[in-house]
Amino acid sequence: VQLQASGGGLVQAGGSLRLSCAASGRTISSDTRAWFRQAPGKEREFVAAIFRSGGNTYYRDSVKGRFTISRDNAKNTFYLQMDSLTSEDTATYYCAAGQRLILSTIRSPQAYPSWGQGTQVTVSS
Image 1 (tube, rainbow, N blue to C red):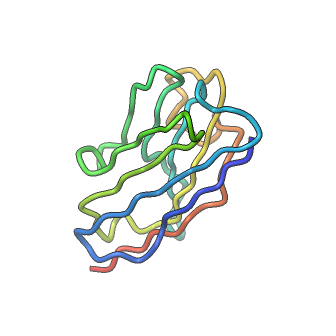
Image 2: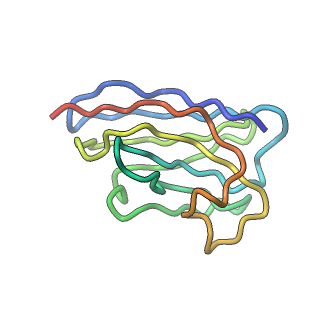
Image 3: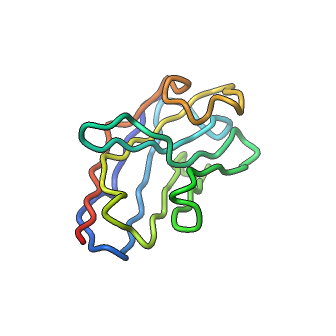
């Protein structure tokens, strides 16, 4: 599967952005779909995920209540709505997908075989 991330940009603190990740090559409706981010000099970190087809969602603590991951299976696309952005959210954001993941692994980048190219999010304070 090929993933194409889009929607990044420059936004002021307190603003919002919506990232999209469009999949092609096969349907990902049963995959675990996730967003990760990586700031310069830091490791790639988990942001949010939708687990398999059931739709349960998971977030890192620092984005709970501000970010929302969602999906549109008809479009083979998933999203990350980011509200109340802060400078700490500045990073390159990557989408990822994987089949038959187990729940205990969804926060690990190594669990995902398919990745998008990344989209830059810069929050100015």
